[in-house]
Length: 304
Image (tube, rainbow, N blue to C red):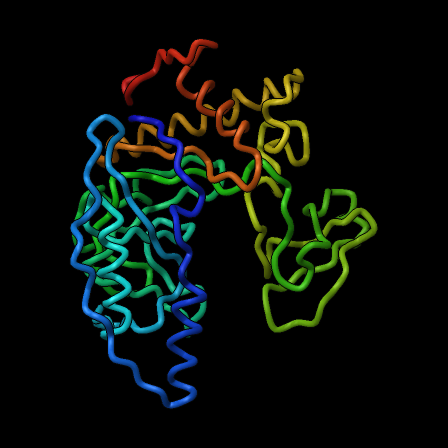
């Protein structure tokens, strides 16, 4: 498997603009005439570097129905984005293995024009039963239906391991660590909520219960079983003995994911998706592919 550095959000994150524009038009009663699809052809392929997935979308796309039909305005957007990719399709991802509905009102319906990119959010290995066969057109979603999209041949890596981040929801920006065992035992572990609750405060250590009713902004927030530091990922390549030992744990898990992905037909693995520290991704590539200072890498495919 080629290990390929990709931009964290693969170009455009159009979720907010799509929802805002379409809902704004509904609210004011305005109607628009969609412009004709762009006449220019899809992006030219680059055999040396693999496919170009182009610009993509994330989140609920207002204007695509449960029967996977897009309204004309959204179809114009889709047709335009398709031209940015050598696949002539729109890339889509959601921090999960298949489309789902995080809220009942926000389903992730796609059309046949989309290529879905599965993602291993954390450090734990992606079990082979979690991965759908790469390149398959039409597959079960996680909403009880079937998506007409195509499963991508790239598996995206863990989310933002280079920063600690924060617990999301009503303690966002305040809770920067999960409660340690001492705080839990003393019942000093405030519960964070993803929505529907007023702003709240973590304990004096900046810790909270972020696992029952909320989630973290990235995997760097969490510990890794087998690593001594409570939040080991942001400092994984700092050169310390603790970090070196933790690397062995993390890359053993990653190798298991790579094997599962290869068995399911995936051709590419992305690096983890970086928040700010691109040098972290470089260090990840060098370790994963056994690269030397000259940039020559011993591991060139899934056999290693």
